[in-house]
Image (cartoon, rainbow, N blue to C red; front, side, top):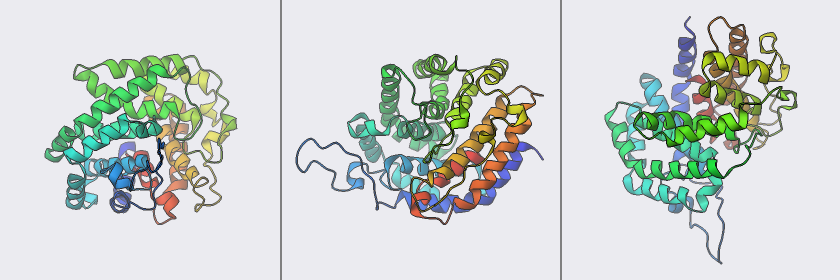
Length: 345
């Protein structure tokens, strides 16, 4: 079986459930985690929807963005396996020019700074998902998202220029994952004659990660990781470097992949308690590792012995997380489906 078909079949088999979860979550305003810096007594948003009228559901802002992305992605990748009409109607009601202008104001303001780079990156991934899709609804949504795209681009460029060092740990602040999620949008803008963001990401990735060697992956994972510091970095560099250069870089960065080393990166994380919001993030680690291993395998030159071990690791991590994506505690249900869609598509 063609490898893309293998993963595509998995996605189509799970798509209806993931779409249902995302549709429910993006309208699920409470409970909500709102991070806000108060400047005077009473300075606090009345409710999440009053502050961010589009991305108010799914417990927090970035999870709401992720779930909106998942719905658009599912419409593109598996339209016959999801309630397409319901998704289009829901997203059409969400993606209004007025609402998205308010979201642009939010990300450019003090509240939006808390979403860097993770929330900003997912939002730019969402915009790219609509902008690169030849579809009447997607074109309308993309036009409405233009102020948000401009605000996010400015925020991301400002963040890159102000950071002396990357954040390497496996939580939402991870720099490599954020940069990787933005790269398709940046490449799309470069092809339209606006190369600034792509050049900034490429330069920062090379400066931060290009000379890394012998990464201490045996220290992974930490107890609340949703990302692998080692694999997100390798995945990012697989996008930045040509295939032959990436193969050499990877040999120095993570030697021994062809022999299944370091073993910790080939072994799915154990989740001790799915109702524990922090421990449950390890489900996301398994999903994102599977995605990274797939991306790394695809970037290696044909015949590289690491391809099969990377794909084997991707399958193993996918098997570990798939039973837990749906039907669990809200601490998992408000975000994990988006990671599963990323993993499978």
